Image 1 (cartoon, rainbow, N blue to C red):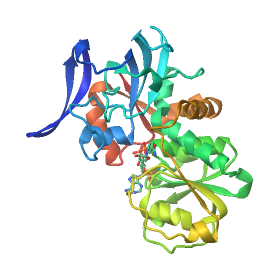
Image 2: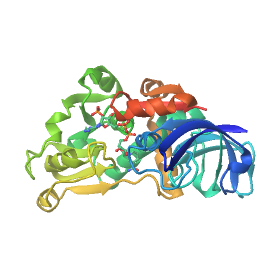
Image 3: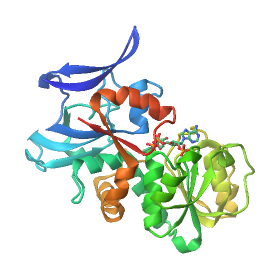
Image 4: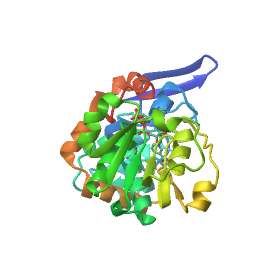
Length: 325
Ligand code: NDP
């Protein structure tokens, strides 16, 4: 027997409950794992509350991230006792996920737990931290460099934003953090932000080209915020777009791209090939200060996942939520 969150959608509507399962209930897969820690990402919160169309098969066990040990495997890369880490691949969306004591997964989706992180620390970063690292790698791939000027991080007090601020500051960037939680100024400065701006200054419709300000941007918000960030990016700058916390739309013109040579780099964490995942996690191993990570992360038990998901979507969570299984 094991316990997991079970999401169901039927004639009576949507229902989320902690449920007892048998091992025989687990889906197909060539590696069976014990989950030690999972986490609550924005996407997990949408799934648990049914506020967004994340789940594409019912019933579903949510949880796009997990870390723990292998119990049983017929995959050549994995033996019982190995420490594994999983981010994405549609787990928690189309395949049962990791807000569960057990999971059965495809061994190709797993990577070894990076040396230097415990399973809890890996989940304190989770998809949010790994995505922040993918954003930083995208800026570097497009030759963005701290000597070129300031970097803007939007949704800075959230999971992706917090880790992006910490990584970029560690790399020597002067970081401007855009936030709706101005009361979190001390937290953002402790992560390494040099300047804090109110997110309202970016969220209203703006002109297609504005005063040049940012050498680079990591945007987790989308909509007018992303449009304004592009409009304020300096000639030749790079904008890594990974999120939609403010909206899915992108109301802008081609002006920043064809008149200022701005590069818009799209970031998808879910389908990244294994080599890119390992590179992003290596970046996190090299740059993350583990004491700083403790400022970002808060632990919750498995049974509080659904109420914490409401808090996260209502903007009451700072940083990252780690779920102890
Ligand atoms: P969080 O909920 O932890 O953080 C989102 C932050 O965005 C909030 O803390 C808040 O920060 C800001 N925000 C929330 N609502 C609004 C709003 N209406 N307008 C403007 N800002 C808002 O989520 P994550 O950090 O986990 O994820 C951030 C985004 O990135 C999400 O959209 C998520 O889906 C996406 N994402 C995408 C991935 C990919 O592969 N492309 C992977 C991971 C995440 P503040 O109060 O500081 O402004």
